[in-house]
Amino acid sequence: MKKVLSMLLVFCLLSTCVAMAEGGFTPGTYTGVGQGRNGEITVEVTLNDSGITDIQVVNSEETPSIGGVAMDSLIAEIVDTQSLAVDAMTGATESSRGLMEAVSNAVTAAGADPELLMKAAVETTKEQVELSADVVIVGAGGAGLTAAVEAARAGASVIVIEAQAFPGGSTGRAGGWLLSAATEEEAAEHGSLTAEQLAEEFEIYGTEYHDRELSEAFMNNLNENRDWIVAEAKEYGYEISRFYDPGFYPLDPADESTMDYTVVYNLMDVTHETLREGDGCWITSTLYEEAKKAGAEFYLDTTATELLSENGAATGIVAVNKNGTTYTVYGKSIILACGGYGANMDLVVKYCGADPENFIYHGAPSNTGFGIVAGESIGARIEHDPSFLYNGNELYNTVGGLVVNGNTEVLDANNQPIPNLYAAGEISCVTVMDPGLFTRGHNIAWDINSGRIAGQVTAARATETEPAA
Image (cartoon, rainbow, N blue to C red; front, side, top):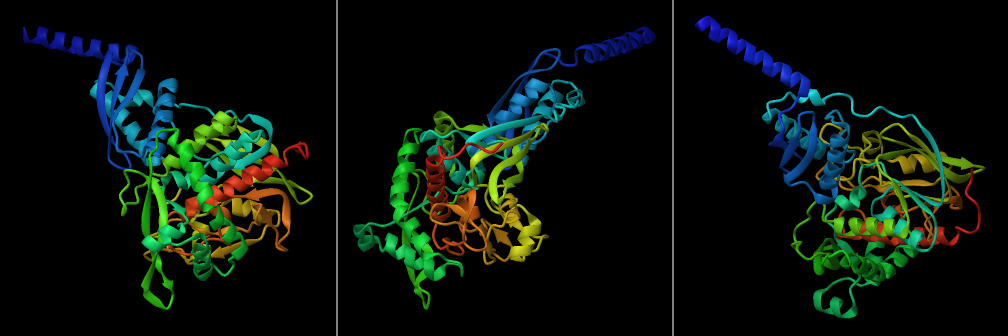
């Protein structure tokens, strides 16, 4: 009798194994948990007998505009390819891995082997594609998105190349503070700095390459730019509040007891002291939707690799997407808005003297210095301020890169504009920015200011010449 029962048990086990091998999965909905960047990610995975039919994130602490967007894209790719052997989304590696871990654990909870989903997901295409537009923008952070909105609304055709799987850049990861200039009343009541005072202070604490004229124009545009982006964001339900923020440097460098106050704007639910990662989404999410609405085309997960030029003039960009397609994109104007170099350890060591062993970078991982190297390759003037390490080895943003004029044209070593080449955002802030955290919101304010100018100027010249080919 025992022998018969043993044989029956073996038969049942073999039958189960055969069923698993033929179908692979037990239909149903299963829960799995993985570790993301900011906490646990919980998913519900629905299976039929052959694979995954649906994935729902039921709990996540990931930043919506970064990890949240990346997970949405990754879920679609997993379901489409029926594979967990997909690449983590550029710019949201920890969120991506956490999601895949959660899905894998859900599959395990179903009694199946996650290895069944580890087949190769996508084969690279190696396709060659040529594109052209009036304005070609490298980078979909605050500056690039702003330029895209302005240029597309003015009627220019716009193509935006972004290395990450989602827009936002360092602006989307930032605390979201936006510098403003105090009115005379605010200055009297709160001790906040007016546009003229801000220009004076930025000159005092600015780099040795400081351009007072450019900086003063920037300060005079602060409130107009603020009103513009706040009005845009309110259309998407973002409620923006004004704060009176203490600065980090004394008004009088010789008297540390005199501290400035500045007027800054941010999301209504942000406390005065908090710098939450991802609150910059009120700016970048708004701009991304408006740019698409205006007709701008976006190529995400696509990394610029080369700046094309002819006879000293910029003519286009070569870029490669995650599936291996190479895009050669020609433009009448090229805007480099691809951030600084904080994610390039070699450049950080070279320009900031950082220790690679303990270095911490808080910006976008796509900020590899491409625009700086690319600009230098056709003779752009490059300047750097090395004093931006906090706590000895921590970096939020770099102050160094291309030098621009008031039209955001990139200048050469003789301070003459390089034809067709423009720059906006962090890559172009060295002649206007203050060192350290002089005040919150100055970086994003410069992104918007320089991005608006670049978009307007390049759109205005869109009818002058045909794109290079």
